[in-house]
Amino acid sequence: MRKIKLIMGVALLLMVAGLAMADEHDTLAAALKQVVEESLAAFNSENVAATLRSVHTKSPAYDTMQAALPNQFNGLDARTELASFRYIGHDDEFAVARVQLKTVAQPGDAFANNVLDTITMFHQENGVWKYWSYHILGVRLVQ
Image (cartoon, rainbow, N blue to C red; front, side, top):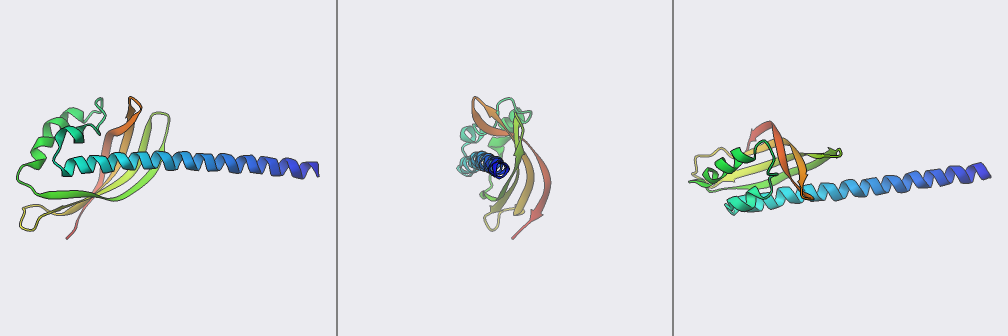
């Protein structure tokens, strides 16, 4: 009887720990998805400063993005939306998600509508999750 109580106690502890871990992952995944959504809202509003606020200032791509971003809005009327977000995991420093972004231009624009598929890394800056870098897995043209 005592063994059964011990086994049940250990099982209960493992179950509670598993639920706590799942909640931690869900919370982190939601925070990362929010970074993407806020960045897209700023980008679609053509707000360079707000878009850059979602990028870690120590990111290897920060300076390049800062220089290139204003040109993204010249003569193109396109909107980008989150097509898919799948949290992959994290360590003590970085978090990773698979992010797919769908960009569609207005009819008549010289732009190929597409879905960009990426593995995106996030890193905290002053306690706030921000983009660090991404790797393009592929681009699929869409209507």
